[in-house]
Image (cartoon, rainbow, N blue to C red; front, side, top):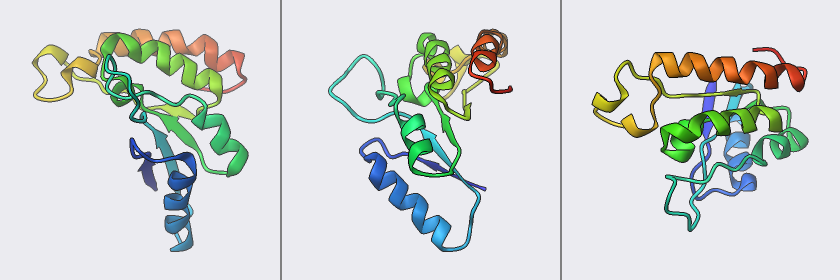
Length: 135
C-alpha cells in the first residue's frame, strides 16, 4: 500500500491527481492521508480539512485517514480532531505516540504518551459506534 499524504498547499483535486498517477501505474492500494493545509492561522501547525474525508468518498473509492497530530501540531487538539475526523467519515486516524513526548527529539508537542493514546482511543469508541463503523 501507498499512503499519500496531502501536501499542505494541495487542493483536493491536486491530491486526487497525485493518487491517479499511482493508480494508473498499477498500484490499486492507495490510502489518502489528510494532515492539514496551510492557512493564515498561526496557532496551529496546519488546519485540518475535516471536509476532505467525505469529499474524497464522494469522488473516489479510496480510503481516507486523518493525521490530527501533524495537522495541528498540538497535543491537546489531537483528540477533538480525531473525533471530528471519525464523525465526518474518515476511515481511520494516524496519531503520533512517544513514550516520553516532552523528551522527543522531534514532534514532541504533538505526540501523545501511550496512556494519552489509550484515553483518546477510548474516547473515539462511542463515535465509531455512532457512525456505524468499527475500530
